[in-house]
Image (cartoon, rainbow, N blue to C red; front, side, top):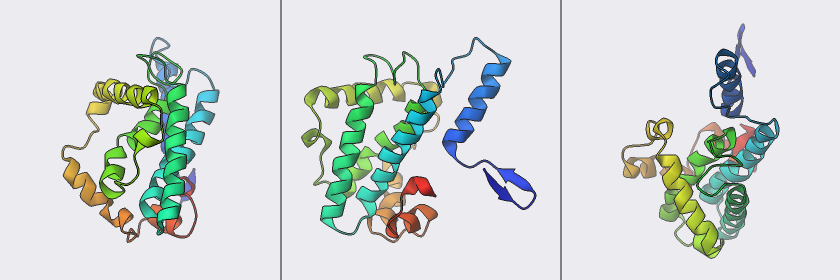
Length: 187
């Protein structure tokens, strides 16, 4: 929560999901709970830190060694996430959870890493089983109407948006944070 003038502003997406889920569950107990257990919120924050922040490090760090270090951690964090994805399901559940909705934007941005950092390949860091599981998971999550509505229409335009991160010229809060040695999730 941030105070802006006389208002309190909620800007962290995980916190927004928590509040909206609590409101939805209060109004209709038969709805799917995105947070079936409090540990899912902790897991969402950890995965956000390990996957989201590391995604930006891979894109923005100036040296190949720093990028490689970031990619190694990014790949191992995705593998850790996949270990908890149920076959034909989602994170520790047969239904999507707060962790899925926290992680999927960054998994769906893997093509950006393939474009800007083609030397780094998930296939070289993960088992074939995990690569297959990731492919299946992405198809499954992309099949959800709630996700379909949020996907970009043109991957080339998304590539253009991230160019400033890949070349280190991004002036956003995330760009400034990563350039100064901090993490994207700290913004």
